[in-house]
Length: 317
Image (cartoon, rainbow, N blue to C red; front, side, top):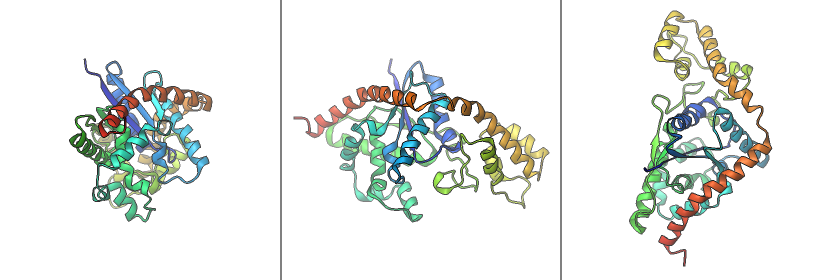
């Protein structure tokens, strides 16, 4: 029977927030719990991608440890999930360069993530520009079938499929087309100001913050004093309760914004507190051991894919 391969990853560009959890980690864990007996799971720390924005080596190093710690705390089992670091496997950079040679400059200029960052005045470095092809390489190396991502990453999967088409048209059916998995209703996680929750926007609720940090963030959610319901609070709250529960809660406390924010604080902390406790018990030595073992497993598949690619393009002689 055919085995499904599922892969996702996060950049260690800062502390994780609840948007990362609901947009990427939770969909991955849901798929894992549903298919752990019939699928292969890869979970990547995308540290090379973080270089497009992080310019402090000590911060990146700390973030790498923290994101692995976060994965483990949320329920990832490294015995059944291949948890590895992108930079430990040079196959990613090699295939990324090969895919760069498959696509045009105008094609990459259409990427939403690139245009969005340029519009915000961020440095247009070459890594940011070619980001979609390195992400495509991350996915294609492992013959990935499904990629759990946030709605904002949908275009990157389209770019990966376009890269597959261009490569296969030139060299034969070598690479597999992946599909995205976006959890219904949480494809885009709203932030404190109603925009997409993002570290770069400064509108996040920390995933593993203390109760006081969570409280501070929630109490700063922008509300519209002219409405009966604080829409930004409601949108975030919908991640934690069913629609029926929320309708009852919000209809019983119309206009009581402080009460509704406090209810959201309780729901967030109820989810986070057990994971936060588990996270505090994970040390750096355990993390290093997991990453060494993980990349050894990851290379079994990536090396095979890259060998086929190198054969096809004529690099292997």
